[in-house]
Image (tube, rainbow, N blue to C red):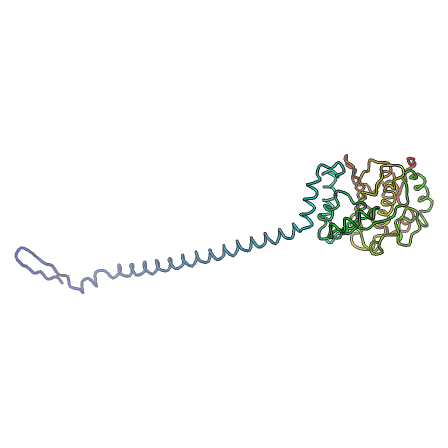
Amino acid sequence: MKNTITNGNTKLILLHPYIQKQANPNRLWLIALVSVFAVASLLTLVYTRESFHITTTSATATHITNTINNSQETLPKSVMKALVHYAANANSTNHMSQTDIKQILDVLKQCISPCNFLVFGLTPETLLWNALNHYGRTVFIDENRYYAAYMEEKYPEIEAYDVQYTTKISELKELVTSVREQSQNECRPVQNLLFSDCKIGLNDLPNQLYELSWDVILVDGPRGYWPEGPGSISAIFTAGVLARSKKGGNHKTHVFVHNYNREVERVSSEEFLCQENLVKSSKDLIAHFVVERVMDEQSKKQFCQNHPTTTSS
């Protein structure tokens, strides 16, 4: 309904409210719907941003915490000491080559923790071996009791014992012959060395060491570069017997012999670790043997299936 009021030349048109109400109901509903949708979208956006912020913050905090924890686990003090020590002496001529170290490291990484690692000889790599086997047990055997005591005092994390060697490199041929003659008696491939009377067997180590199942053995001592030196014949013989007499754990023992290019190491390894057990002999100075625990009676009476026919004097 429309009313017109004339006032001079001006006309004023008034629309009745009833007509406005009837003319725009759909538009009002549309406006209301859009408003509700806009408010809902705004609230959703605010909530999502808050949730995302909280989630991201929490994830970042967790990541940082894990990183710190992992750093603490993978870089304990003993590892840092070893790295510093090894870096400081990197130019030493007595160091083992990186290729040889990697061979041993690869085996240690595959070892089921805790790994029992026996090392003959305190060398420039001592702290490194102990650090690389951080979650296992690493034991060092050396002929110098003063140096063993010094290392334990300076590095409390090192477990070292001294032992008396009675062999001489100049007697290599005679020693090998005597072991062959007693391979079914005192110098058996499978025995408890603690009670052994074999001349080249080490029977004066701490009793507990004979009870452990050694997963990895490294022969890098004793000294053996002059005729009257003890050489490694006793260490290699002992490693062979410990591997074959293993009581528990994995039935295989990885035995590494350093300075394999020298006669006493090569001949002793051929006799007591055996060529059929040789996995790899690198162009550097290390040989890798895998010796299995002996179960059958025949193998308990001899070290190798085929002994070398000659032994260098």
